[in-house]
Image 1 (cartoon, rainbow, N blue to C red):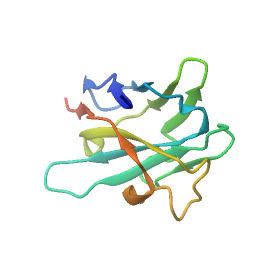
Image 2 (image 1 turned 180 degrees about the vertical axis):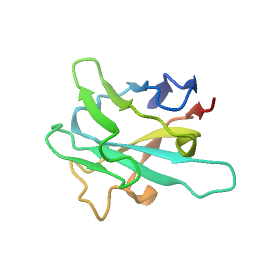
Image 3 (image 1 turned 45 degrees about the vertical axis):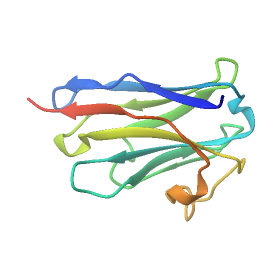
Image 4 (image 1 turned 90 degrees about the vertical axis):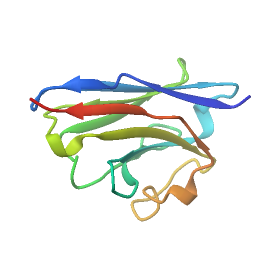
Amino acid sequence: QLQLVESGGGLVQPGGSLRLSCAASGFSLNTYTIGWFRQAPGKGREGVSSISSSGLSTNYAHSVKGRFTISRDNAKNTVYLQMNSLKPEDTAGYFCAASTYSKLDVNLYSLSTMYHYWGQGTQVTVSA
């Protein structure tokens, strides 16, 4: 069974850091673009970042650029989202998703319809 599992969420103070992980089971992530999305209560799902299958191409939302870094370790079948300088407005459920496209450009990576498999999410709360 194809499955994505996120971990690493939690409660952190403003200015703090968290690293989210997205681990795959039942399939290899090697040929998939992986995206991270987030959804805050009462808001729509927002594309945060994506990384191509090779790891050579990444995309970031303007709201997180310079603070978040996406990376992947295909040997561990895992994608990471390092989140630094966290702000209260980063509070949301974070989801990873896999797309069968090996690469998505800046105009497509944030479209949830481009992704075929989704994890259940992990909660990130940034609060003093």
